[in-house]
Image 1: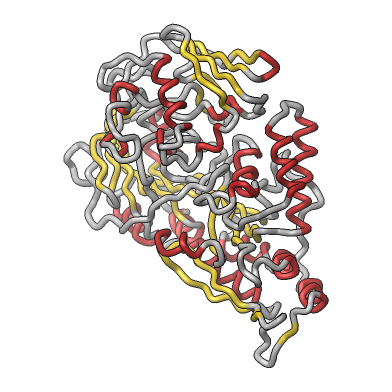
Image 2: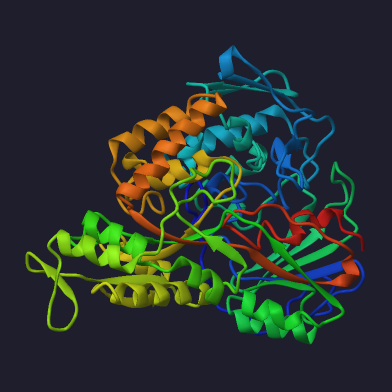
Length: 522
């Protein structure tokens, strides 16, 4: 799930054979190759359907991109945009001489096509609400693009890291099901050689990349959903690097040939508490769980310290975090809340009220050990309050139809701007829209604050609005936020000292030390 909108990623079976890195070696490649292990794969490789919307897509570029410190810098644009008309007009001058990997020139028409297609009602892009402010996109000649906004949308420039698709290819086929979704063509540093679903994504360097041909000529992402298998493959030499949970990353601490990187992230784990259920929709139940859950124990025991306690989508060390909204773990107060609200314990220790038993299922994605551990810990804490939670696992196909009434252990998070997480997660009009507002959260004060925050560039006014949102989550938490998770990667030292960015929830594929693999040495 991605921030702003929580993005659905399909988990697939772990690869059984060693990945082919494009060199024909069948495993780890030579000096000009890198093979890394990731846990997820996208549903599509088309930016028109949401692929790479937060940057680092490898195959594509956006008008802008992020540096290591998450500051915006030009990519397909020659410079940062010129903002006029009180924040309603953004003008981008495009970089000269850029070509798609099939040799066709990149122009302003491709930018207009990309944004207009995403906004088209026929396009199945779950994140199109992120471009709600766009009134129109205009090409002025081949080298200039002008965005006209309905209102001054504060973080709009951050939305232009979105990858640009070639009109001459993508416009000739069905946007939702055409071959472009699996065989994309872009302007990026790498070209896709092969996508074996559930096994690997194989890339080769784009020799005509405008930023210079990457020294890592062959780059493979091996899709291995099982954490233990990923660690075993890294240990055996099949992989040059991998994302790993804390307990497995620490097993490489004494490996002199490998280095561990800890990337700070906005990636959170939470439990949805749908309003459609008599139990999870009850404010007393929500508030009791919010202070009855032991977040510190989760950080210490599940994450082994690689993370922090979460009280909302904004991490506690972010300048956007509202001080004073931390929740103290207090079982006595949580039990009192339930007692006062009429939830009485029965002989079996489980509470009931008006014939409803304080019990509900909690789903998590099959194969995800971190989510499983969080779900089990949450259920254990709830039991101490007289709330009976049955932990279940399944695929998204199984889970999604149950989301209106059943709780789900999910993830999300995007660091670029607070609007990206909070709007899609809490706006009442987005309730039930895929992975948007999964709790059917409905608070008019929050709705008004979310709208106000995205329509002004005044930092103080935006902070005031997000303070309102975060305080509202204390009074009526539609979700129980549990932890913010540091992402751990173990990589072969032969690539030198690498860097990481502050990462979104969608880790491994677009982030990790390979966020800039095109700049690695061979």
